[in-house]
Amino acid sequence: MQNDDPKDRAAFDSAIQALKAEIANAGAHLSLDASARLAYTRQIQAMANDLQFEAMSGRITWAQAAEQAQVARNTIMEIIRGRSTPIGRAMAQSLKAEGKTLNELIARKAQQIHGPTVQFDRLTAAQQNAVYGEIVQSAGRSNPKVTQTMRGLSRAGRGLIVLSIALSVYNVATANDKAAAAGKELAVTGAGIGGGIAGGALAGLACGPGAPVCVTVGAFVGGALAAFGVDFLW
Picture 1 (tube, one colour):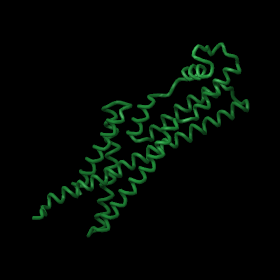
Picture 2 (picture 1 turned 45 degrees about the horizontal axis):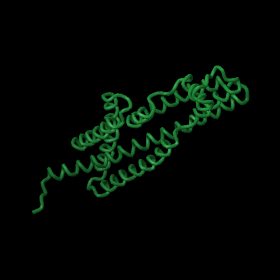
Picture 3 (picture 1 turned 30 degrees about the vertical axis):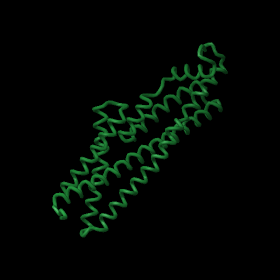
Picture 4 (picture 1 turned 30 degrees about the horizontal axis):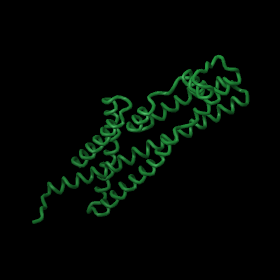
């Protein structure tokens, strides 16, 4: 005998709405973070190219170019992290908590070029400029593996958003009251995305920086709770 209990049907519909909202939530997170990463890659490359041109044309010294490159890259990194979702920010912090200082970069590049026992202050002016030049060039390079991964995630994110939209369109098309259904779809999906961002931010505060697993759980729990709540109140 078929069970047509309205409560069971309502619970099923609410679960489906929450699932659809979570699909949109995941798609939004992936798309936003991928866009932020690609913007970061473009901006640091443009910055490094400009500083190389300035140094090669004699407008600034290579030492000044290296110092500006270090400051600019760290600044761009922090700005882009501020535009990322809590999940994207936590993942970035887990990979690199903060940018390196100029002295750390000088020591690292000098050792890479001249060996582990090198003393930078004993290098010739030309050798020091070569170290500074490498710092400027490296400031314009992002981790290629991370960038390639984010390109793939960007495509996945767009696919999830398209899927969520398709499900919403179907729900509206098959509803008796299409205007009310459209409003509900918009409200539940928006709540799922907004709840995901808020949940991830709260988890980030609780877990601390550089905890992507904790923040991801918080984002999806927050998205699900928000979607359930709006669906229940509708």
